[in-house]
Image (cartoon, rainbow, N blue to C red; front, side, top):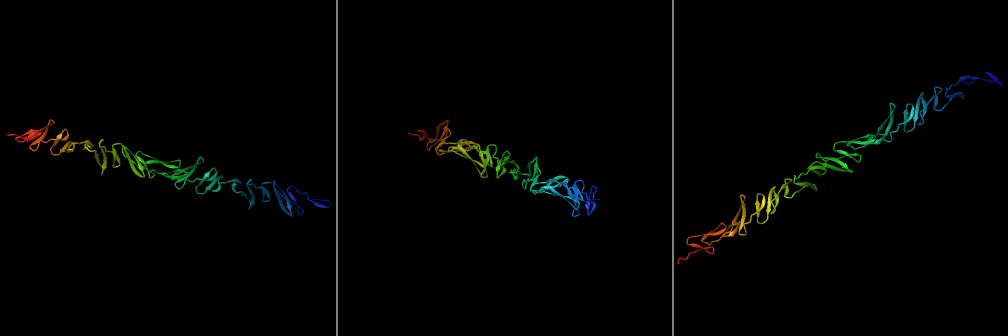
Length: 326
């Protein structure tokens, strides 16, 4: 203490200032300056330091938040999208579809339904109700249920039944059916006409396009050939030949059976039979006139007409004629 110009002067030691005429401790630590204002101690701290327990103490939350001491504890008030990590306001942003947190120092995103983490953000990953979504190497992957495939990013039904495989080509469903199966109502459906025809569905109905000489029987192309002289059909599943004039069915084919205009033809046990009119007999396979008159019988022997006349009658002009007894 000294008097200068009749005024008391205190020359205080380091860390002390004059308060109420006494050298009183006024220490804010090495990172701040101390003063008394209106009798109260005041610390003027450097940047990133605040007063704690009367000392300038570090209080730094980084450039994205403000720091203070509450009840002696450091508190960081971080900007939007930032949370405290290792005492600093650190970016923790999962985007608008999720909330962010730090767990054991690692960022964790809690995403909304149908969103998963991609590149640190909650990103839409929705494959629809028939599949689960994931990101693989940054690309969206849909794991679809059975009979569903990815179309336009969603698990969409793609079912061709048990006899074919399904795919989407240019956004359209395509069925790759097994042999003898074609697409009907979106499913691989049996369409088999046998080895002698091709099968198709027309207006939902099975159609067989059979080879020549084959018609549909029991859903298969079945041989139906009556030869070149008749047409074949199946009636009540039985083969029927509609033969041209002069032809009848023999051994399943329309075969010539012509006895001429004077008789009718038939096949008996596979042999041709002519039923000739009166006075006609079979010659060279035709009903040919053979008339010896009322007094004899006619026949063909070795292709020649023969009259067998009654007693007292002889052949004259091809007829059995009575003898002259004079």
